[in-house]
Amino acid sequence: MQNTNIWRKLNLQWHKIAIALFFALTSSLVAQGQLSQEAKWARKNNPNYDKKKLTYGFLIGLHTSTYQIKYSDRMTSQKFDSLHSVVPDWNRGFALGFIVNYRATDFLDLRLTPTVAFHEHTLNYRFTDPAVPDIRELVETTMVELPILLKYKSERRGNVRMYVVGGVKPSIEASGKNKEDEKNGNLKITGSNINLEAGFGFDLYYPLFKFSPEIRFSRGLSNILANTTNAYGLPLKSVNTNTITIYFLFQ
Image (tube, rainbow, N blue to C red; front, side, top):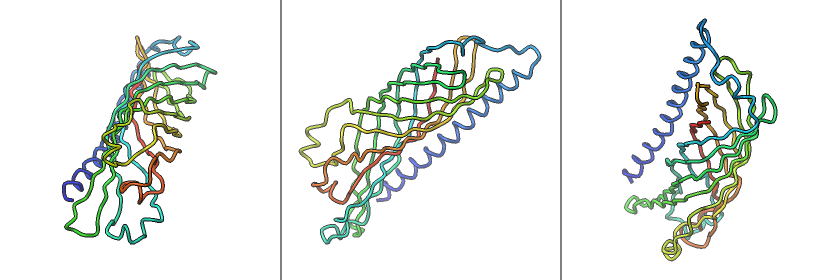
C-alpha cells in the first residue's frame, strides 16, 4: 500500500509541476516578445503569415490523465463489504500529430489536429482489511484522435498573439484488445470516446515559423466502461476520462 501511495503522490506532483512549467515558459516567451516589440528596431516576423487561408504544421503533446468513476449500487452489497474504495491515479502520456488550420476571419480559425495519443490509466482497489494488499489495475491505450476546434484570437501585438480554443475530440482505439487481458478478466473499456475540449495559448511569431505553447483541458462525455460483470467492473457504474495536455505547436 505504501508503494502505491508514493506512486500516486509522485503523479500528482508531476501534474502540478507540468502546469507550473507551462506558465513559466509561456510568461518568459511572451515577455521576450513584448521586450522585442518595444525596441525601436523591432519588426514583425512573418508579417504576411496571418493572411494565409490554410496553414499546416505538427504538434507534440504532454498530458496527464485520470479516470473519473461513479460507484454502482452493488458497491454497498455484502459481496463487496471488504472493498473500501476504488481510487484513480493521474498518469503521464504523450501525443504526436499534424495541424490543418483554416482562417475563417481575422480573429477566428477552424483547426483540425489528427493525433496519435498514448495513454495510461490506473485504478487502485483498496480493501478494509490492512492485510489485503491494494490491487493496481493498469489500462494502456493508443488512441487516434481528431479534435475539431474553433480558435478565437486576439489582436496581434508585435510578435505575440493570445488565443482561446474549444471544441470536440472524437477518438478511437488504434490497438486491438489484448486477448490475454480478456481471459484474465481485467477491467474492460470501450474502444471509442468523445471529449469536450477547452484551453488557451499564445502564438509567437519567429522569422521562419510560428510557435504556439498551449494548455488544453479535456472532459470525456462517454461512459467507457465496457463490462460490469467481472470483479473489476462490478463495483463501477461509469468511467469517464479527464485529461490536461500541454501542446507545443509548430506551423
